Length: 380
Image (cartoon, rainbow, N blue to C red; front, side):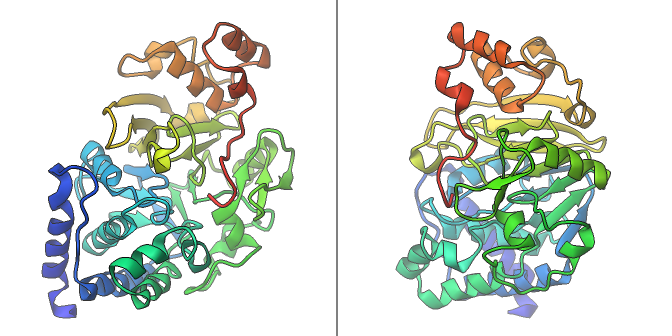
Protein backbone atom coordinates (compact mmCIF):
# COMPACT_ATOMS: atom_id res chain seq x y z
CA UNK A 1 0.00 0.00 0.00
CA UNK A 2 2.89 2.37 0.72
CA UNK A 3 3.47 3.38 -2.93
CA UNK A 4 -0.23 4.17 -3.42
CA UNK A 5 -0.91 6.00 -0.15
CA UNK A 6 -1.71 9.35 -1.75
CA UNK A 7 -4.03 7.92 -4.41
CA UNK A 8 -5.82 5.69 -1.93
CA UNK A 9 -6.26 8.46 0.60
CA UNK A 10 -7.80 10.75 -2.00
CA UNK A 11 -10.18 8.00 -3.05
CA UNK A 12 -11.12 7.16 0.53
CA UNK A 13 -11.79 10.80 1.41
CA UNK A 14 -13.87 11.28 -1.74
CA UNK A 15 -16.05 8.27 -0.94
CA UNK A 16 -16.48 9.32 2.68
CA UNK A 17 -17.61 12.77 1.54
CA UNK A 18 -20.00 11.51 -1.16
CA UNK A 19 -22.81 11.16 1.40
CA UNK A 20 -22.76 14.86 2.35
CA UNK A 21 -25.93 15.68 0.42
CA UNK A 22 -27.76 12.49 1.35
CA UNK A 23 -30.22 12.10 4.19
CA UNK A 24 -28.24 11.50 7.44
CA UNK A 25 -27.72 7.86 8.31
CA UNK A 26 -26.33 6.30 5.15
CA UNK A 27 -23.18 4.26 5.77
CA UNK A 28 -19.98 4.34 3.73
CA UNK A 29 -18.65 0.82 3.33
CA UNK A 30 -14.89 1.02 2.83
CA UNK A 31 -12.83 -2.10 2.19
CA UNK A 32 -11.38 -3.69 5.30
CA UNK A 33 -7.89 -3.43 3.82
CA UNK A 34 -8.37 0.31 3.33
CA UNK A 35 -9.43 0.81 6.94
CA UNK A 36 -6.54 -1.27 8.19
CA UNK A 37 -4.24 0.86 6.06
CA UNK A 38 -5.66 4.04 7.60
CA UNK A 39 -4.93 2.71 11.08
CA UNK A 40 -1.40 1.59 10.30
CA UNK A 41 -0.34 4.72 8.42
CA UNK A 42 -1.86 7.16 10.92
CA UNK A 43 -0.25 5.19 13.75
CA UNK A 44 3.13 5.80 12.12
CA UNK A 45 2.41 9.51 11.91
CA UNK A 46 1.22 9.75 15.52
CA UNK A 47 4.43 8.11 16.72
CA UNK A 48 6.54 10.41 14.53
CA UNK A 49 5.01 13.46 16.21
CA UNK A 50 5.27 14.40 19.91
CA UNK A 51 2.80 13.20 22.52
CA UNK A 52 2.59 16.86 23.55
CA UNK A 53 1.93 18.84 20.38
CA UNK A 54 3.13 22.43 20.10
CA UNK A 55 0.85 24.08 17.55
CA UNK A 56 0.44 27.52 16.04
CA UNK A 57 -2.74 29.47 15.36
CA UNK A 58 -4.86 29.88 13.31
CA UNK A 59 -6.79 26.68 13.83
CA UNK A 60 -10.21 25.37 14.76
CA UNK A 61 -10.79 23.22 17.84
CA UNK A 62 -13.56 20.63 18.15
CA UNK A 63 -14.77 18.60 21.12
CA UNK A 64 -16.48 15.20 21.35
CA UNK A 65 -17.95 13.77 18.12
CA UNK A 66 -19.04 10.31 19.33
CA UNK A 67 -19.87 8.73 16.00
CA UNK A 68 -22.23 11.50 14.86
CA UNK A 69 -20.78 11.46 11.37
CA UNK A 70 -23.16 13.83 9.64
CA UNK A 71 -22.63 16.39 12.38
CA UNK A 72 -18.88 16.06 11.79
CA UNK A 73 -19.45 16.79 8.10
CA UNK A 74 -21.44 19.87 9.05
CA UNK A 75 -18.56 21.09 11.22
CA UNK A 76 -16.33 20.95 8.17
CA UNK A 77 -18.97 22.69 6.06
CA UNK A 78 -19.08 25.55 8.57
CA UNK A 79 -15.37 25.71 9.29
CA UNK A 80 -14.03 24.75 5.82
CA UNK A 81 -12.81 21.35 4.74
CA UNK A 82 -9.10 20.60 5.14
CA UNK A 83 -6.71 21.99 4.03
CA UNK A 84 -8.61 25.29 3.89
CA UNK A 85 -8.49 25.36 7.70
CA UNK A 86 -6.26 23.74 10.33
CA UNK A 87 -7.96 21.54 12.91
CA UNK A 88 -7.40 20.15 16.39
CA UNK A 89 -9.87 17.56 17.72
CA UNK A 90 -9.94 16.84 21.45
CA UNK A 91 -10.89 13.16 21.39
CA UNK A 92 -13.92 10.88 21.80
CA UNK A 93 -14.47 10.11 18.14
CA UNK A 94 -16.17 6.75 18.67
CA UNK A 95 -18.97 5.19 20.77
CA UNK A 96 -22.54 6.31 21.43
CA UNK A 97 -23.34 7.43 17.87
CA UNK A 98 -24.30 5.16 14.99
CA UNK A 99 -21.40 5.89 12.63
CA UNK A 100 -18.19 5.67 14.60
CA UNK A 101 -16.44 3.94 11.70
CA UNK A 102 -17.13 6.69 9.18
CA UNK A 103 -16.18 9.30 11.77
CA UNK A 104 -12.82 7.85 12.73
CA UNK A 105 -11.96 6.84 9.16
CA UNK A 106 -12.45 10.37 7.82
CA UNK A 107 -10.43 11.85 10.67
CA UNK A 108 -7.57 9.38 10.18
CA UNK A 109 -7.66 9.95 6.42
CA UNK A 110 -7.33 13.70 6.90
CA UNK A 111 -4.49 13.12 9.36
CA UNK A 112 -2.64 11.10 6.74
CA UNK A 113 -3.40 13.58 3.95
CA UNK A 114 -2.47 16.69 5.96
CA UNK A 115 -0.21 15.53 8.82
CA UNK A 116 1.06 19.04 9.67
CA UNK A 117 -2.34 20.76 9.54
CA UNK A 118 -4.75 18.26 11.09
CA UNK A 119 -4.36 16.99 14.65
CA UNK A 120 -6.19 14.45 16.80
CA UNK A 121 -5.85 14.09 20.57
CA UNK A 122 -6.85 11.02 22.54
CA UNK A 123 -10.10 10.94 24.47
CA UNK A 124 -11.15 8.52 27.18
CA UNK A 125 -13.19 6.58 24.60
CA UNK A 126 -10.08 5.91 22.50
CA UNK A 127 -9.41 3.07 24.92
CA UNK A 128 -10.28 -0.61 24.48
CA UNK A 129 -11.84 -1.06 27.91
CA UNK A 130 -14.29 1.79 27.22
CA UNK A 131 -15.18 1.41 23.54
CA UNK A 132 -15.53 -2.33 24.09
CA UNK A 133 -18.66 -1.45 26.09
CA UNK A 134 -20.11 1.74 24.60
CA UNK A 135 -20.64 0.84 20.96
CA UNK A 136 -17.51 0.88 18.84
CA UNK A 137 -16.63 -2.77 19.39
CA UNK A 138 -20.14 -3.84 18.42
CA UNK A 139 -20.10 -1.65 15.31
CA UNK A 140 -16.76 -3.09 14.17
CA UNK A 141 -17.96 -6.63 14.86
CA UNK A 142 -21.26 -6.11 13.03
CA UNK A 143 -19.85 -4.39 9.95
CA UNK A 144 -16.41 -6.03 9.75
CA UNK A 145 -14.76 -8.17 12.44
CA UNK A 146 -13.15 -8.10 15.87
CA UNK A 147 -9.67 -8.17 14.38
CA UNK A 148 -10.28 -4.75 12.83
CA UNK A 149 -11.36 -3.38 16.21
CA UNK A 150 -8.03 -4.55 17.64
CA UNK A 151 -6.24 -2.72 14.82
CA UNK A 152 -8.02 0.48 15.83
CA UNK A 153 -6.97 -0.14 19.44
CA UNK A 154 -3.33 -0.32 18.36
CA UNK A 155 -3.80 3.00 16.58
CA UNK A 156 -5.57 4.70 19.50
CA UNK A 157 -2.76 3.65 21.85
CA UNK A 158 -0.43 5.96 19.90
CA UNK A 159 -2.53 9.14 19.83
CA UNK A 160 -1.05 12.33 21.34
CA UNK A 161 -2.48 13.49 24.66
CA UNK A 162 -2.00 17.26 24.93
CA UNK A 163 -1.59 20.22 22.58
CA UNK A 164 -0.38 23.71 23.49
CA UNK A 165 -1.24 26.50 21.06
CA UNK A 166 1.26 29.34 20.78
CA UNK A 167 2.47 28.63 24.32
CA UNK A 168 -0.80 30.02 25.73
CA UNK A 169 -3.71 27.60 25.24
CA UNK A 170 -3.50 24.19 26.93
CA UNK A 171 -5.69 21.59 25.22
CA UNK A 172 -6.58 18.08 26.36
CA UNK A 173 -9.66 15.89 26.47
CA UNK A 174 -10.37 15.76 30.20
CA UNK A 175 -8.54 18.16 32.45
CA UNK A 176 -5.89 18.71 35.09
CA UNK A 177 -4.08 16.21 37.28
CA UNK A 178 -2.64 16.51 40.80
CA UNK A 179 0.34 14.59 39.43
CA UNK A 180 1.10 17.17 36.72
CA UNK A 181 4.00 19.30 37.93
CA UNK A 182 5.69 20.10 34.61
CA UNK A 183 5.16 19.49 30.90
CA UNK A 184 8.17 17.22 30.69
CA UNK A 185 6.14 14.58 32.55
CA UNK A 186 3.73 14.45 29.62
CA UNK A 187 6.56 14.26 27.10
CA UNK A 188 8.00 11.27 28.96
CA UNK A 189 4.84 9.16 28.56
CA UNK A 190 5.82 6.29 26.29
CA UNK A 191 3.64 5.09 23.42
CA UNK A 192 1.97 2.82 22.53
CA UNK A 193 0.13 2.74 25.83
CA UNK A 194 -3.25 1.79 27.20
CA UNK A 195 -4.98 4.24 29.54
CA UNK A 196 -4.23 3.30 33.18
CA UNK A 197 -6.92 3.38 35.85
CA UNK A 198 -5.20 6.22 37.70
CA UNK A 199 -2.35 8.66 37.38
CA UNK A 200 -1.36 11.47 35.03
CA UNK A 201 -2.51 9.98 31.72
CA UNK A 202 -5.80 8.87 33.22
CA UNK A 203 -6.48 12.33 34.65
CA UNK A 204 -5.69 14.18 31.42
CA UNK A 205 -8.41 12.11 29.74
CA UNK A 206 -10.93 11.82 32.57
CA UNK A 207 -10.91 14.71 35.09
CA UNK A 208 -13.62 17.39 35.25
CA UNK A 209 -13.95 20.96 36.56
CA UNK A 210 -16.33 21.50 39.47
CA UNK A 211 -17.37 24.93 40.70
CA UNK A 212 -18.31 23.50 44.10
CA UNK A 213 -14.86 22.03 44.78
CA UNK A 214 -11.77 23.68 46.20
CA UNK A 215 -8.60 21.87 45.22
CA UNK A 216 -9.26 18.27 44.21
CA UNK A 217 -12.47 16.34 44.70
CA UNK A 218 -13.98 12.92 44.13
CA UNK A 219 -15.30 12.39 40.60
CA UNK A 220 -18.83 10.98 40.27
CA UNK A 221 -17.67 9.04 37.22
CA UNK A 222 -15.73 6.77 39.55
CA UNK A 223 -12.52 7.63 37.70
CA UNK A 224 -9.97 10.41 38.28
CA UNK A 225 -10.79 13.67 40.09
CA UNK A 226 -12.66 16.93 39.88
CA UNK A 227 -10.78 20.21 40.25
CA UNK A 228 -11.81 23.65 41.42
CA UNK A 229 -11.34 27.15 40.09
CA UNK A 230 -8.32 27.55 42.34
CA UNK A 231 -6.52 24.69 40.60
CA UNK A 232 -7.19 26.26 37.20
CA UNK A 233 -5.78 29.63 38.25
CA UNK A 234 -2.76 28.01 39.91
CA UNK A 235 -2.00 25.86 36.85
CA UNK A 236 -2.25 28.74 34.38
CA UNK A 237 -0.10 31.04 36.49
CA UNK A 238 2.57 28.43 37.09
CA UNK A 239 2.93 27.57 33.40
CA UNK A 240 2.35 31.08 32.00
CA UNK A 241 -0.77 29.98 30.12
CA UNK A 242 -3.97 31.91 29.42
CA UNK A 243 -6.62 29.28 28.78
CA UNK A 244 -7.44 25.60 29.24
CA UNK A 245 -9.52 24.15 26.41
CA UNK A 246 -11.04 20.72 27.04
CA UNK A 247 -14.01 18.53 26.08
CA UNK A 248 -15.44 15.43 27.82
CA UNK A 249 -18.78 16.85 29.03
CA UNK A 250 -22.10 17.69 27.43
CA UNK A 251 -22.78 21.43 27.74
CA UNK A 252 -25.99 23.07 26.60
CA UNK A 253 -24.56 25.65 24.21
CA UNK A 254 -21.75 23.42 22.92
CA UNK A 255 -19.25 25.48 24.91
CA UNK A 256 -19.19 26.57 28.54
CA UNK A 257 -16.78 28.71 30.53
CA UNK A 258 -15.40 28.01 33.99
CA UNK A 259 -13.11 29.74 36.48
CA UNK A 260 -13.60 33.32 35.27
CA UNK A 261 -13.33 32.18 31.67
CA UNK A 262 -9.90 30.67 32.20
CA UNK A 263 -11.25 27.28 31.09
CA UNK A 264 -13.68 26.40 28.32
CA UNK A 265 -15.42 23.08 27.70
CA UNK A 266 -16.20 22.23 24.07
CA UNK A 267 -18.70 19.61 22.96
CA UNK A 268 -19.24 19.16 19.22
CA UNK A 269 -21.97 16.49 19.07
CA UNK A 270 -25.33 18.33 18.96
CA UNK A 271 -28.51 16.64 20.20
CA UNK A 272 -26.15 14.11 21.80
CA UNK A 273 -27.38 10.53 21.38
CA UNK A 274 -30.77 11.97 20.43
CA UNK A 275 -31.41 12.44 24.15
CA UNK A 276 -29.89 15.84 24.99
CA UNK A 277 -31.14 19.17 23.66
CA UNK A 278 -27.62 20.56 23.35
CA UNK A 279 -25.93 22.48 20.59
CA UNK A 280 -22.52 21.50 19.24
CA UNK A 281 -19.69 24.03 19.09
CA UNK A 282 -16.35 24.65 17.43
CA UNK A 283 -13.81 27.20 18.65
CA UNK A 284 -11.75 29.16 16.13
CA UNK A 285 -8.44 30.66 17.24
CA UNK A 286 -7.00 33.31 14.94
CA UNK A 287 -3.40 34.49 14.60
CA UNK A 288 -3.83 36.99 17.44
CA UNK A 289 -5.33 34.29 19.71
CA UNK A 290 -8.77 35.86 19.49
CA UNK A 291 -11.27 33.04 19.98
CA UNK A 292 -14.73 32.73 18.46
CA UNK A 293 -17.37 30.03 18.84
CA UNK A 294 -19.63 28.66 16.14
CA UNK A 295 -22.57 26.54 17.25
CA UNK A 296 -25.02 24.36 15.38
CA UNK A 297 -27.94 22.05 16.02
CA UNK A 298 -27.98 18.40 14.96
CA UNK A 299 -27.92 17.48 11.26
CA UNK A 300 -31.30 15.88 11.81
CA UNK A 301 -32.83 19.06 13.23
CA UNK A 302 -33.31 22.66 12.17
CA UNK A 303 -29.98 24.25 11.25
CA UNK A 304 -28.85 27.30 13.22
CA UNK A 305 -25.56 29.16 13.54
CA UNK A 306 -24.27 31.92 15.77
CA UNK A 307 -20.93 33.26 16.86
CA UNK A 308 -19.50 34.70 20.04
CA UNK A 309 -16.31 36.70 19.77
CA UNK A 310 -14.09 37.61 22.69
CA UNK A 311 -10.32 38.12 22.91
CA UNK A 312 -8.28 35.55 24.78
CA UNK A 313 -7.06 38.21 27.19
CA UNK A 314 -10.65 38.66 28.32
CA UNK A 315 -10.87 34.92 29.05
CA UNK A 316 -7.97 35.26 31.44
CA UNK A 317 -9.10 38.50 33.05
CA UNK A 318 -10.65 38.59 36.50
CA UNK A 319 -12.53 41.75 35.45
CA UNK A 320 -14.46 40.20 32.59
CA UNK A 321 -17.45 42.24 31.38
CA UNK A 322 -20.91 40.90 32.13
CA UNK A 323 -22.10 39.11 29.00
CA UNK A 324 -25.72 40.08 29.50
CA UNK A 325 -24.78 43.76 29.69
CA UNK A 326 -23.20 43.88 26.25
CA UNK A 327 -24.74 41.18 24.04
CA UNK A 328 -24.39 43.27 20.89
CA UNK A 329 -20.63 43.41 21.29
CA UNK A 330 -20.29 39.66 21.76
CA UNK A 331 -22.74 38.22 19.25
CA UNK A 332 -22.25 38.75 15.53
CA UNK A 333 -25.82 37.67 14.78
CA UNK A 334 -29.07 38.29 16.70
CA UNK A 335 -29.75 36.00 19.63
CA UNK A 336 -32.28 35.97 22.42
CA UNK A 337 -31.55 37.11 25.95
CA UNK A 338 -32.50 33.60 27.03
CA UNK A 339 -29.54 32.11 25.13
CA UNK A 340 -27.30 34.90 26.38
CA UNK A 341 -28.24 34.19 29.97
CA UNK A 342 -27.36 30.52 29.55
CA UNK A 343 -23.96 31.53 28.22
CA UNK A 344 -23.63 33.78 31.23
CA UNK A 345 -24.32 30.87 33.54
CA UNK A 346 -21.76 28.78 31.69
CA UNK A 347 -19.08 31.39 32.29
CA UNK A 348 -19.31 30.86 36.07
CA UNK A 349 -17.92 34.40 36.41
CA UNK A 350 -18.67 38.12 36.16
CA UNK A 351 -22.08 37.77 37.77
CA UNK A 352 -23.24 37.22 41.32
CA UNK A 353 -25.57 34.55 42.65
CA UNK A 354 -28.09 37.33 43.21
CA UNK A 355 -27.96 38.22 39.51
CA UNK A 356 -28.55 34.60 38.55
CA UNK A 357 -31.49 34.37 40.91
CA UNK A 358 -32.88 37.55 39.38
CA UNK A 359 -32.71 35.92 35.95
CA UNK A 360 -34.48 32.92 37.44
CA UNK A 361 -37.25 35.04 38.92
CA UNK A 362 -37.77 36.69 35.52
CA UNK A 363 -38.15 33.29 33.89
CA UNK A 364 -34.99 33.60 31.80
CA UNK A 365 -33.42 30.53 33.38
CA UNK A 366 -34.99 27.77 35.41
CA UNK A 367 -34.38 27.02 39.07
CA UNK A 368 -32.68 23.77 38.05
CA UNK A 369 -30.18 25.69 35.91
CA UNK A 370 -28.93 27.46 39.02
CA UNK A 371 -27.67 24.18 40.39
CA UNK A 372 -27.32 21.86 37.37
CA UNK A 373 -24.05 19.86 37.37
CA UNK A 374 -21.53 20.08 34.56
CA UNK A 375 -21.43 16.35 33.90
CA UNK A 376 -24.39 14.31 32.71
CA UNK A 377 -23.61 10.70 33.47
CA UNK A 378 -20.87 8.47 34.75
CA UNK A 379 -18.53 7.17 32.04
CA UNK A 380 -19.58 9.65 29.39
